[in-house]
Amino acid sequence: MYWFFVIIVFLLAGIKTGKPKKYQKVSVIIPAYNEEDTVAKVIEVIKKVSFVDEVIVVNDGSSDNTESEALKAGAIVINHETNKGKGEALYTGYMNAECDIIAFIDADIYNLTSKKVEAMIKPILLGKADITKTKFSRASGRVTELTAKPLLNFFFPEISFEQPLSGQFAARKEILKRINFEKDYGVDVGIVIDADVLGISILEVDIGAIEHDMSPLSDLNIMANEVVRTIINRANKYGRVTMIDDIGYYIRMAIVGLSLVILGLFTIFFVKAVPLFIGVLVSIVGIILAIYYMIKVIVQSIGMFKKTPKGNLVKSFVKIHFPMIISIILLLLMISTFIGAAHYENGVLSIEPNSRNLVIYADDAHSDRSISVRGPYTVDAAIENESGEIRMPNEAMMTLGLKVNDTLRIGSEVYLVNETRPGEPDILRLPIDVKKEFDVQNGDVIQNSRLKDVFEGSVATHLNNDNENVTFAEKFTITSRYKNATTFEILSNGVSMANCTGILKDNTSYSIAVDDSTVETFTYYSGMDKVSLEGYGIEIVFKNEEGTSTNRFVQSSQDFLSFYF
Image 1 (spheres, rainbow, N blue to C red):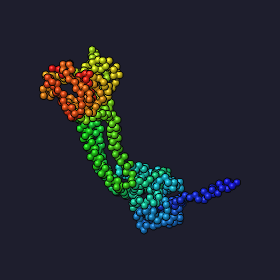
Image 2: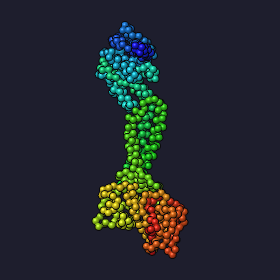
Image 3: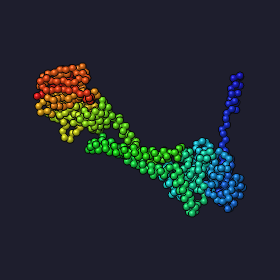
Image 4: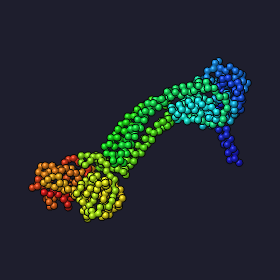
């Protein structure tokens, strides 16, 4: 029994100490100018709404019985001595309202209902929006369709309300302090623009059909002029004219630059008919244009954002400059694709999408080409009666450090290296035994950076016969690219024959042959000066400079250099 009373006490305490929801006072402002036929009916409908606390009619210099009809209906009436315009009437009512929420409702609506009024105000009471504006079906809307919407779409494309000029609004009073009230018919669109730019949440609610007097053409002309003036003034105030004019031009030029970058990259990697330097040139021009005009856009945008520090400017940028955003996304996708296909190894950066492989050598002094487009290579069968030959493109030979008529020992067999036939620029023709040794099949595609992995361990003999009196051959094993390869010069009787680069290991013995007979064996070490072949006039002079190479010279069990006189 004791526990029962304790529980009851706690429940009662909870009920007593719970904070009641803060009451929100609601005022309705009715601007009226010569509306004696409808104003009383409108007031009566509004007063039926349970959460409306006061109804204020601003009699804007009427010459009929608007004031008396409003007083009879139970509204508070504030008079303007002369007609000052709808905006002034709304502002007067707003300044005199003692409330948290204000609704603005026209005085000439024939079929106003309490449900229509509730639909305007309830979203604010429930915290769903700071401002609500209405949309409704009616027979007019000429100024909206012919004037307001086209201008808003041009300067404020993020504003996509069906009826930006509807005269029925509701808002939190504290929010309206941030709004600039126009004095005339521009007040409706001015509130919409200010709310959008300042980041105020505004909700369009459908209140059904509305019936009210059709304005004569002369009044519509005045209304259209005031709406146009308001939109243009707001566009200037918030920097939208600059955005459409200067920034629009800068962004279009930035798109041109981005498009050129994309075009240049596309030709480099995917259009073999276009020379490499043209693709590079187009890309460089595009990068310069894009960077220059993007900087201009940023500078102009900073000034614009200062005018609208808390606004919805991003929406306008997205809608107006959608093509630039797409260009940037496309370029980023291309760049990410190339980065994903990038391969770096000891001074060589290879960018190898499936169609073409861009190869950039960091040590261009020791490569046949510091920048080139190579591969990929498609494996195919050897030509009939060429079981002892490997046909490979010149680009593949450069990657492997080979030349035509070099030989490769693969497994127990030796194969002659030959170039591809005309019309087969990227075909790698391998005899059947070679394909078995490398574990590749016809149709396999080999990226340029993978080529040395496929041929790794093969022993190459590279013949150099540029000298009329003596020929020499280098013998090396193809391996992974090594950054600190050794560079040396071969001299014959003091005359330079060639500069060679390959991998020599410290404290390792190497042999040199003359006419297939070993004549010199030495132990290599870093900083070594030279090796001389006495009686043959041959000197191998080691240089301090280093390069990168996939060629590892064979050790003393074989001759890494052979000379033929």
